[in-house]
Each structure stands twice: as structure tokens, then as C-alpha cells.
Length: 228
Length: 403
Image (cartoon, rainbow over all chains, first blue to last red; front, side, top):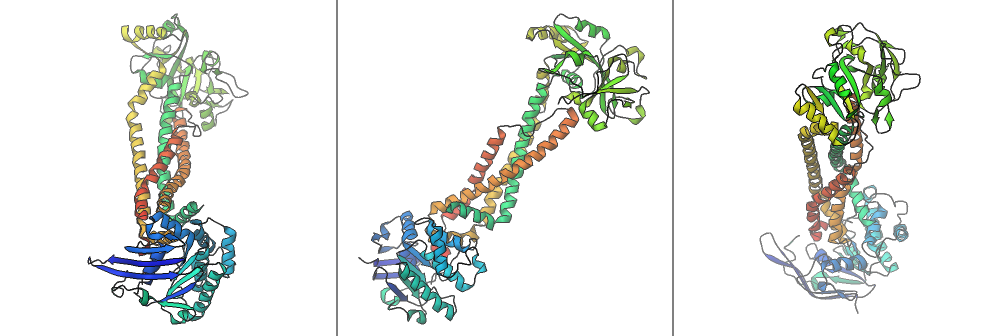
């Protein structure tokens, strides 16, 4: 059974003018356990909305998302939160680190809503991404590349089955982007996590064996017209 | 752990507003606790003070003024009694002990009270407690110009055994009203925590025959402190009938505690106003919690969205805001005890200086439990509105710009 299976998934938004715009319309998408898949798409192609739907942050209008054998659209919000906390790691383009928390605390928060706090594992993750000397540093005290590595460690903190990465190298220079991508892929392999990465960066896409253009799976008409 | 980490970090991130809001809670809580405690302790202490007597006999007038003058050494005397009146009540079979006092002079505003030595050897000013002297002193000889000084007066005026002083005429200090008489301090009382601590005791005749006093009133007394032979209310009731109902020259203030309670009933409105001010300050402080958290919600929403994206449920976010509001109140209430002690020590110092009565800031009062509980609960309640706003935070909207 695939780790992630999407069918007939639709999501639309109401604009301020009151019009309904469909942003995601995916008839079928599958992803196997431990696979590393890149979805290519330009800005406005519904990449983030799709990832939010897979993460259970957004609820689809219709269709189904089955993650690790659980049908997400059938779950209530608390259950989706729980599934996200235990099954999904999320790496954002802007990292979304909590500025008032140390690196270690950011990683601890990544596990505290799921499997529970394990300080040693959190430290080992930060060591793995080369931040063993920065455990008590705050994000503002780190370089952009270092912040990205904290975000990677945090995404793996709950030992997820699936890591979602939304333009993870979008804010990095070429050198950092290359290193960061390699780190994300390697860390996911080491932790037996599948990786679903969305990007429009051709350099990034070129490093994946499986690359799927989002336009092929997302048939929504309005994707270029809405920016939410 | 996670919840407390979120709360602690949020308090730290908003340190300035946390401190200001907590201080407003501290002010409200400290004010509320101190007003309440001063009110209750004052009433209990003042109504409990009777100097070891059941009643006071004085010139016709207000019972309250009579008690304040004779027992608390406050207020002016409302007139004198003839010696015959003193002898009359002294010989009444219901009366176990009658101690005359005479007032009218002071030493730098501290009252000189003339009395007889029986006050010191026959009266228990509180159950089981007689007036005691500091080492080296003795009670005055009624035939000599000697003085026994209350502990507070001795401390404030630096009077010690062997010192001499000129009394001043009147109850208010006036440098031009100095008497020629010279009194010698022969004893200093140990602290009794009663109004006697702020009095200089001299022989009755010392007042009566002070140079410059009216010779025609040389045997008059200001009041008679009365100890009844039995604790039965009938004895007091009979004397009350005799002096207050049948007679019209004298006033018999009995029982003393009930008379003082009248004072507190009369000034009860003042307590209520102070309590009302405290409640209002508490409400304003609580509203400031609501305002400070609510106003910071816009900057918090991204953080809330991140926490939610990490798997935090809405109720965790809701609880974190409620607990943060309660924590601000709790911090404020910790400081409130410092504010309380500050106000209490200030009030106790003033009340002791003015009346001799000692308030105990460290004495437990139930307000020390219910006021923190009430203010922390109010604080938590104030967190409900911003918590609802946090609860409704749209994660996707506040997480990142959607591509």
C-alpha cells in the first residue's frame, strides 16, 4: 500500500469578491514508502496548498488523501493534528523557526506534540546537521544556512514517515542550496522518511530521480489567478 | 513541559508588557489584601483593647469619646468628675476596682496621665498580663513627682530612668505652655502593645496639683476606669441604668468593646470606599491583561500557526493563552505580597504612633488566600478573549505566503 495516495482531491477558495477559485484539482497521485519525489511547479501552481492539504492543515473540499493507511478527509481536526504531529515533518521555504526559542527548543517542539520529548534524540539531530555548538543559540544568531539546518532537524524530530519540503532552498544561495538539499535527502534516508519536495528550481529538480510536473497532476483552472 | 515552555517563552518575549501588567496586578492585590487586613485587624485589635476594664465613667457626653479618651488616650476629655463621684462608684458593690485618671498635660504631645499605683499592681491589661518595668525601674510614689514612661514614648523621646522633664499644659504640645513642675522618670514600661505604650504615667495628684491648674478642681478626675466584680452583664446593666438612664450628670460607657465597635460601624463607609477602590484597581489590572495579550495577538499569530503546523492542537493554544494570563496574574500576586507588606508596615507604624495599637503584618488573614485565588482566576478569565482569537487562528493563512 502506498504511503501517500491522493484521489479526486479538490480545494477551492473564495476570493474577496465572492468568486470561488479552484486551486487544487488532483485526480490521482501516489507515493511509496521512503521514496523521494520532487514536484515541479511555478509560483501560483498550488504547490503550498497541496502540501497543506497533505499535512492536514487545510481540509479539502472533496476527494481523499490516505496517509500511512489513514484517510485524512475522514478525520476531524484534532485527529489530523495528531496525525501531522506523528507522521509528517514539514520544511518551509522561510524555515518558520520560532524566534523566541533556542535551536534545541525548536527541535524539541517538533517532537513534543507527537511522540514526546526526547532531548538526546533532538541533540543528535542537531549534531547530525552540524549544529552541535549551536544548541542554545537563537535563530537570529544563526546564518540562513544554519537556520535551514535547524528546520531540517525539526522536521525529522518526530521521526516522520513523510517529510514535506516547500521550496526548501528558495532562500539560500547556490552553495548553501546544494548542501542543504543533500542534507535533507540524506537525513530522510537515514531516518527512513519519504520526501515530497516542491520547487521550481531546475538545479534542485535535476537531483531527483522522480520528478513530476505539478501541472500534470493538478488540473485546476484558476491556479495562476489566485495568490492566498 | 511543552505548555509551560510556550508560556514561559511568551512571557519572556513580551517581557515589558508582562512586567507592567504584573505590576498593576501587584498593586491591586497588595492594596486589596492590605485594606482588608488593616480593616479586620484594626477592628479586632481595637475592640479587644480595654486596658483590663469593663467600663469607663466620665462626665456627661459621648460614650465613644469617653472610651477613646480614657482607654485609647485619644480625643479630648469631655469634662471632669468630682472626687465624690469617683468614691461613689468605687464603693458600689458591683465594682471590683475603680481606677481614676486625670489628663490635661503633655510632654511633646505624649499625654501625661495621672493615676494611682493600683493600676500597675492590680490590673491585668490583658488576661494574665500586668504592666512590667524594664530592669532598674520602679512604679512611681504617689506622693512624689515621679513618672513611669510608656515604652513607645521612651523610645521616641529618649527618656530613661533618672531623666527629668517639665510637662506642658494641654493635650497639644505648645512650647509656651510649659509647667514649672519637674518630674523624674523612675521607670520605663516594657512594651504592652496597648495605648499605654505612648503615655507618661504620673501620680493622680501630679496632674491635679500641677502648677497653673485650677485649685478648685484639684480633687477632680477626668474619668474612672471600672472593673466590675462579676462578668455577669447584670452588673453593667444596673450601672448603665443608674448613670445613663436615671442620672443626667455622668456617662457610663459599658461595655467598652461595644462602644468601640460603634466607631468602626460609623467609619465602615470608609472601609467600603477603600475596598471599592481596590476592586476597581483589580478590574483595571485584569483588563490590562486582556488588552496587553489581545494587542499582541497579531504578532503572535505566525508563531501560533507554526506551533499548529508542528501538530499543536487548538486547545493547547487556547490553554497556553489562558495559562499565560493566569501566570501574569500569579507573578503579580507574588509581588503583591511585597506591596502588601509595604503598605502594612507603613499602616502599622502610623497606627502604632497614633494609638499604641500594634498591627501584625505577618498575621495570617484569609484574604491572603482568596485575593490571590480571585485575581489569578480573573486573570485567567481575562485571557479568554485573546485565547479565543488564538484558537481561531487560520494556520495556512499565517504560516507562509501560499504560492
